[in-house]
Length: 192
Image 1 (spheres, rainbow, N blue to C red):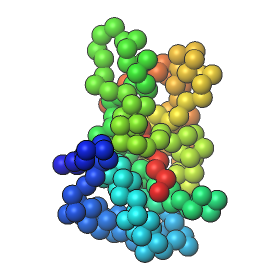
Image 2: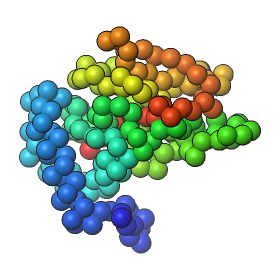
Image 3: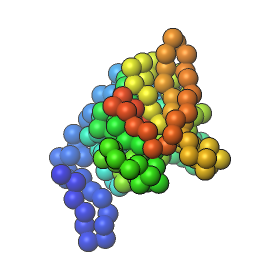
Image 4: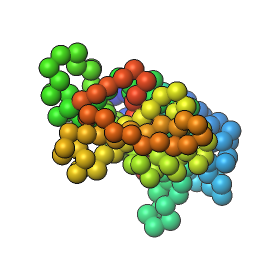
């Protein structure tokens, strides 16, 4: 169970950190096509220097996201992790888009919303562009769909967008932001 110190810094216990690092390393080595040219030792050193990011990765893992390194930003020196689970993370499904959408529902409200769940674990929803980049690394969301960061102009009108992969093609759809389905969740990104 993650703990917080008196400064509200989110931390993992030493054994949780070690287990998470082993899981991330195994996933990294199993999926080298996602991060050509990157070395695990450098990523691990960065993670150990930023333990607050380990807590977020642990939460991504705990909710079924299977986070993995997908890129390195040379400008900032940050490694970029995405949720790489085959389907939208199980622990983050059946949610509407944001708080406003949740509160607009009169009945049959979902338990949560994508924007606040992501913020609670200090990750960002993938953008449409990031989702398309993820799909170049494999076949994701063949049976599920994932909310993506919605442009303000669409959200202002009550909508939100989500993506999936069908017929070997990535599709972008729209729905009312208050909608939720058992097969729709969200994928996140984290910079370390």
